Image (cartoon, rainbow, N blue to C red):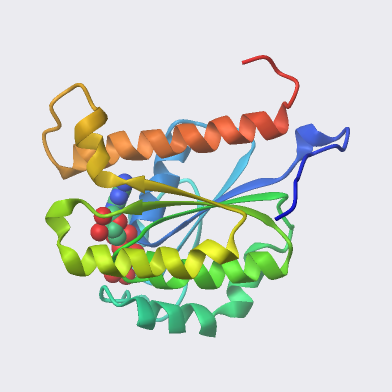
Length: 208
Ligand SMILES: Nc1nc2c(ncn2[C@@H]2O[C@H](COP(=O)(O)OP(=O)(O)OP(=O)(O)O)[C@@H](O)[C@H]2O)c(=O)[nH]1
Ligand SMILES: [Mg+2]
């Protein structure tokens, strides 16, 4: 583990990228784009072209044939490995900090995120992963799949922040109507974390 700081006097120009993987990752990126955050390059990557159609205001990278990974992390992992060159190209203008956002438990986010993290690690990009874990109602298979995804990811990133989706029902004061409303609240929290950390890195002397 290394300590890291933007010591350069050009720290205002530090390159920060947020890269969303899979459906959840893409929603997180769209939500950041909607809020008009400045200074963070937004990219989404998915195996599923239909899911990508609803993502907006970000650079979109599709890997595989566009038909998704069918809730299968191994197949997403293979697609990502086969797309190593395409993924490496995302980092052509090497960011100083990479936020990797994904929902664990499905196919693409769970299987492709560790491949992307390994590429970023090889390029020595400081990487902070923000990953959600499934609602209890999603069942044991998704929960186990999510844990396996986290286990494969944890040693490839500098920091991993786990956001258990279920927690939103404990922390939100208001009644949450449906899953879309829960996602919105959670994605707002994730956006806040990314914004806060970016702001600390970009303006280390600013009083908060
Ligand atoms: N917080 C939050 N969680 C989400 C969101 N969308 C999905 N999830 C969670 O993320 C898990 C994975 O879902 P997706 O990201 O849609 O799956 P995927 O990675 O695209 O996987 P495949 O479609 O199977 O290839 C789900 O089981 C949910 O728990 C979202 O917008 N916000
Ligand atoms: Mg998907």
